[in-house]
Image 1 (cartoon, rainbow, N blue to C red):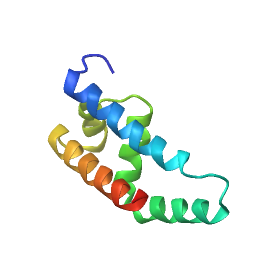
Image 2: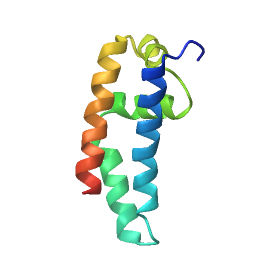
Image 3: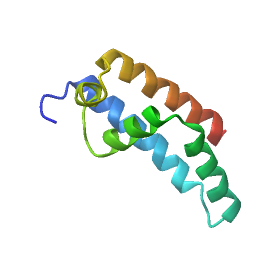
Image 4: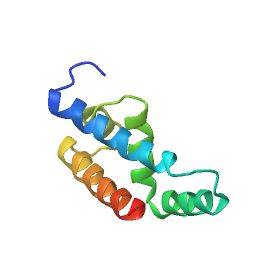
Length: 90
């Protein structure tokens, strides 16, 4: 997890903030939890693993190495996930 570039660190923080937005909008609404579970379930297994590993502090390069994907491909998938979250949060 060493050797983060500034861009990688900023991307990680941005993803964490987006995920934090999801949890902040919860407000005790049980329907929200159902929808959140549906959103997460709608992601493919690779995206779920990427989110999990990034939330554990792994860099995009490390995640890519673990999954057999390039750092660039991981970042592309993260960008797509960010857009999905933005659409979902509204």
